Image 1 (cartoon, rainbow, N blue to C red):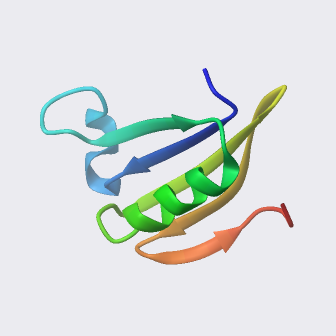
Image 2 (cartoon, rainbow, N blue to C red; image 1 turned 135 degrees about the vertical axis):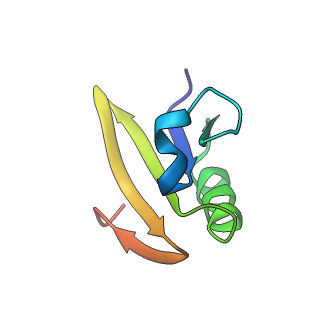
Length: 75
């Protein structure tokens, strides 16, 4: 697994992740700027888009809820 992960989901369909219809999507990246650009591009297509960084455990850096951005840290 790479260092950055973007998880996208539609909130009503979250229990269906991995099924059809698709309730969510996972994409992993090596570069933070590419991961941020991807998360930014997906925010209008999903209810929740979350960017994580691997720091021993997965740490949430920022997330979008219905297109609105929130940050967890000053990274």
